[in-house]
Length: 308
Ligand SMILES: [Ca+2]
Ligand SMILES: [Ca+2]
Image (cartoon, protein in one colour):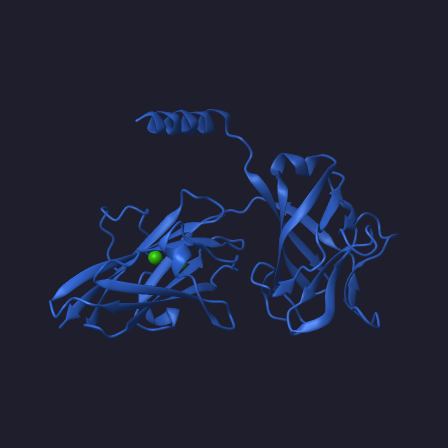
C-alpha cells in the first residue's frame, strides 16, 4: 500500500508540473539522404546553447543503395564513441566524437560497407564543411551538401503493436492494429491464437512487434515462463540469425533495437509439453512495452492445447 501511495503521489506530481520529456528527436537531411537523430537533453534545450549526445541514428531515405534502419539495429555502425554536436539554439555549430580528430564531425558507418560512412558536419554557415557520405580510405566524396537539422516533437512517439501467429511472416499473424492496454482482463478480440501441440513434441509459434509511432521505436518484450509441464524457449531474429533470449523474456523482458515505423521485431516461441499423457493447456502471453514510454504496452496470447 505504501508503494501505491508513492506511485500515486508521483503521478500527481507529473500531471501538475508536466516536466519536459527526456531525449530529443531530430530530423536530418543532406543531399538526397535523410533520417533521424535521437539525442539526450529535452525539448527546452533546443532553444538555447546546448551540447547534445547522439544516442541513435536512423537512415530513412537514401539514394545510394544502403538499407534503411537504425544504428541500434546496426544498419548504421557507430564505432567511434560519444558522437554529439554543439547547438546554438538554431544550428549545430560543431559535431564531435571521442576518437580520431575530436572536432571534425560525427561519423556513422554503413552496414555491409566497411569504409563508407555518413560524416555529419556543422550547418552553421558553410565555412566549416558540408555533411558527406565518404569512403574512409580514399576520401571519394559520394555526396556532400549542407545539413538541415530540425528538432521535432513526434506526433506519436510510443505505440507498440504486438501480433501473434503460427506463421513466421507478420502478414500471416493476427493482432495488427488491435491493442490491449496491457491488462488481459480487458477483452480485446483478435489478439489471441490457439496452437495445438502433441505431448513431448516441439511446437512453434511467433510474435512480432511493430511500431505505430512516427519515429523509430524499440520494445521490451516479456513472455510467459516455463513450468513443470510446459518448457519454453524464446529466440529473437537479429536480421541475420536467431538468438536465444529465453532468460530475458522470462524475467524482466528482452529489449529490442529501435525499428523504423512499420518494421517488425520478431520472436520465435518453441514450446515442448510434458503432460504425462494428459490433456492440458497453457496460455502463453507476450507483453510488448515501448522503450520510449514504459506505460504503453500491447498484449497478445497463444493458448497451447496438448493432445496426448
Ligand atoms: Ca496488436
Ligand atoms: Ca499497427
